[in-house]
Length: 267
Length: 95
Image: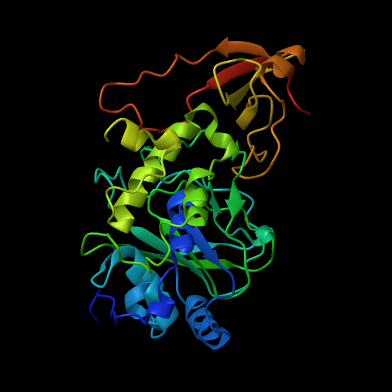
C-alpha cells in the first residue's frame, strides 16, 4: 500500500480561517475536541488495541486513513501543507495502564533548517483522553524556538504547559517544532495516540482561507499572543511569528511584528 | 546524619534574581532509587516565586546563567530558556 495520503481539493468552507491560521502561527497548534465521528473512532480503536506500538499501523490499518480523508481534515491539511503533502513518518504511541512516568520534554526529529517552511504532526485520539490518562503535554508558543530533540530534557514543568486532553475523536494539529512529551497514565486503561507527520509538497503561501487576514482582530491574535514563559524573549518570539505570518499569507508586506519592526528595520 | 544533594533548576523571565520563575525541575539525591522523580507536567505553579525566594528558604545558588549573546544575523532567534539558575541544598536521606 502506498505511503501517500490521498488528497481531494477542499471545499473552501473546510479550509482554516484567517483567525484559525493566526492562532496556529501564534500557539503552534490547533486542538479540535471530539472532531472525528464516533463510528470511525470505534473502528480505529478496535484495530489499535490489537496493534503494538510502532510505525506500521499506517500501512496495516484498514481504517486510519479514513480519518485523514475526511473533508474537514483534508481542509486543515490543505491549509497548512497544501495539496501534495508528503507522508514520511507515522507512529502509534502507547502509554500502558497505571504507568507513572512522564516522557522527557523534546522536539521530534532533528533541527529544522528551513527558514519558514514547516511540517505538521496530527495527533489523533480515538478514545476519550482525560488528563489523568496521559494525553500529550505541549508548551504553546514553543514551536519556533530552536532546540535539538532532547536538549531540553532537564526541564520538568513550565508555566503555560497544557495537555491535549479531549473526548474520543480529538484531533490536534501541531507545528513540527512544538516542545512536547507523553504523560503518565493513572487509569487502568491503555492510552493510544496515532501520530502522522506530513511535510509540504509546495510553498506554504496562501493555502488557507485568506478572507480577512489583514483585519485588526486577526492581527491582534499574533500581536497579543505572548506567553508568560517567554519572558524577556517574548518580543523575539513575536518577531518569529510575524515573519511566519508573512510566509503563510504569502504577503511579504504585512507587518504584525513588535512595534512594526519588520517595516522599521526594512526586514 | 547522612546528607545528600538536591538540585533545583529555576528559570526566570529576566536575569534579575527577583524576576518571576517560569520553569522548574527538582533532582533529589536524597530520594531512594525507586522513588518517582519530579515528572514533566506534574505541577502548574513554581515552588518559589523567584531565586531570591528560594535563597530565603535555604537554597544555595551554585550557578548563574551567562547573559545571552546575539550574533549578527541571528538577533531574533530564540531557543532554550536562557535565565536558568542551579540551586543546591543538602538534606538527610529520605526514610
